[in-house]
Image (tube, rainbow, N blue to C red):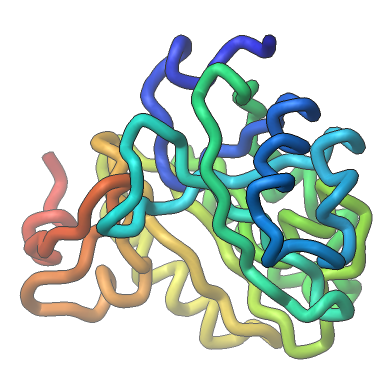
Length: 220
């Protein structure tokens, strides 16, 4: 059985994992609602990843909550799954720089600006959403109206980083969404964090909470 993600560190939202094909097949046998869902039966056998999502309130916390988003041509369905940690292998999330070749040509100048902005602040953004799944699976997730969703892991939020990101987003041909990922695993929408004068919603694997935006923007 594959080395479980929890043996390496606790799972966090947006972690990527690969499921053991036998465990995945057993899970599908208990999910008749997924019968006939395109791409799903051989998802794990093809080595395609799953993403760790937030627990629903009534879910068994001894399992890892997972998501499998289907591409638009397959209904754009977001499938919720859960598997034991022992059935999962952690995968590194690709960086934006490594994924940019899968992005539309019209996005490339904005990606140049984002990567330069990230480098100036010592950050390494990662895609999620359509760009991530197209890069990882080769299936057609991106459409003309797709957003660019980015994760920004930080130890602290660099001064002027959010303002610079807002300037890039204002000039971009696509909407730039995504989260600032804090060291404790909390994810906060970057635009809310930039604009708020009071509390903002922070999402964890197992809970949500309100955090003070002005304090988070202050240098430690």
